[in-house]
Length: 198
Image (cartoon, one colour):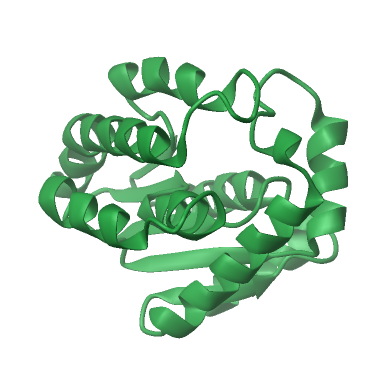
């Protein structure tokens, strides 16, 4: 299977991706846990360009091109080889992030995002879990985490609220693939909701 986790910054999706990968490995599955942007050597180099620096460093159009380039390398070098050998891939973000961040919240670029995706990626996860959490709570978590990868958090609460609406809309747009998971509570409680949905 190819499983993705999505949601706003600080919602807990990275934690949940790790917990699910660990649970699947414990059940005997060959699991590759990966992330975007990143997940391959070339994509990790592009990651630094995207997640560090000031919020307006790139236009939404440039971001979209950079994310697509990183995703293509990730797909070629990590995701497809793992699936081809029969493994399960769990990724912290995939194409839905670009649909929401650049396609709706950063710019009105959904048509461009979809055309680039069809041309260069043409792959969707089997199941996507959107960890749904109040934007103010998630933003506080993101700030508490610290570090240099805070470019999108620096765009403020209004931006995070637009993202949250965009991720919720995905569950309506792709009902066969996307599951909205309540992100409130202890990590193990959220993990139980993910496992039940899987």
